[in-house]
Length: 251
Image (cartoon, rainbow, N blue to C red; front, side, top):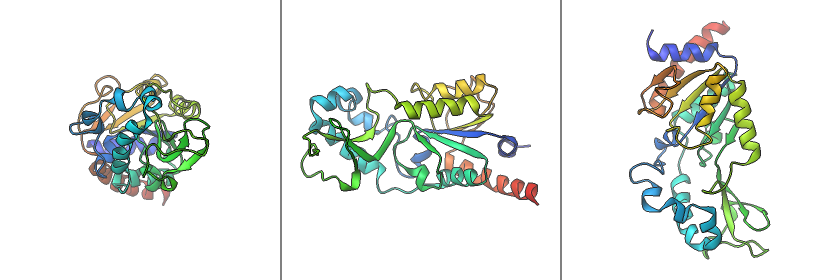
């Protein structure tokens, strides 16, 4: 039995599967890994442009970086991997997607139970009074965009120096505790605390399945099965098998 069939069989045998996704799943949609070669953090020092203290000291400067971030995550479409996870949710196999991405591609790909661990670029709020906004309603003609209270508006993304929102943290770690299988897709598993999620799941006895063309921090430690392919290509093969197996089980 090849890796794709083993992967698909484990997935169908699971009772509570969750997925953890990182930048790699969106690369094939045209969003480069911010930490990769030619990524956003090679052009902008993350602590000079991506830290909450930097935003509060000079929001106009940080917004110049945020505009480029927005250009990367807007105007792209979900790829086959996002769509596959949405289909797996509809089949009742995937119970939750926990993503480190801020691009909304999982929701647009069909997933409804998504925990955005690092926030969402399409949503905004005032850094002073926390009034919510949508990115589409914000004018960037003058930087930084300002709330009626005078405070600077910012995206709902987690900047360096900020903690993970309590609700997202609780939902993600609760899912890691409860799952019997976790698919780890396109993440280096280097950024805490998201990197702890597969470790928690493994300690609770879950199978760890990985899709990543390169090894991650968890590949040699806890991964039970690693498909070294890009996410879209891997899920294309997996879904053919899952659909056939699922149809056979329901007939």
